[in-house]
Length: 246
Image (tube, rainbow, N blue to C red):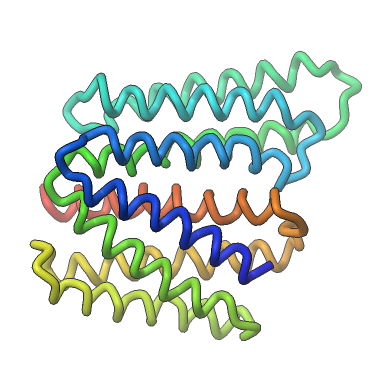
């Protein structure tokens, strides 16, 4: 399963890189973000074995489309300005969906918690769309993808978690620093931070997936891979945004 997750993540990363290279089309990254968000919306409720997966899939899909549309067509102070509003609506919809299942339904609390988590991850994935609207979007995407690939190769091994939790961030950190030698307009510190965040994310979710034994089929693979890519985009976006304007 480790190899399948890595391959799925690399395919998603290749789509992002292809879209990021088309800098004349602002919505190219948004289109790829929507694809990844919809894959996540379908796979996440089944990855966490929700008792009623389809209502959560619909909610995640609606929130995904709304958040990415807001980034592309309703920019505020920041392209991600309306993300909090979408998350708030998504949380309310998750609560309503679980209440409507009835008092005797099983797994309502678990469905609520996992549903809210999925909403946050899906909405934050629209950060990839936001990256397509700024001039440093290609640089952000490239360094993040390099960090994900490096840490993903470490995570693919059968090394114990106590080793990969240290080694994966270290490898991606070094790769992120090296990537800034390219004419991307990023400083070494920015490359280090992006690489480090990608490595921490990959190693942490690897440990979580192995401990819970949640990835058992293709749906689980897609859920984990798309989730990693979506969250890494958000982490990179907010990190660069903070460093640029701090």
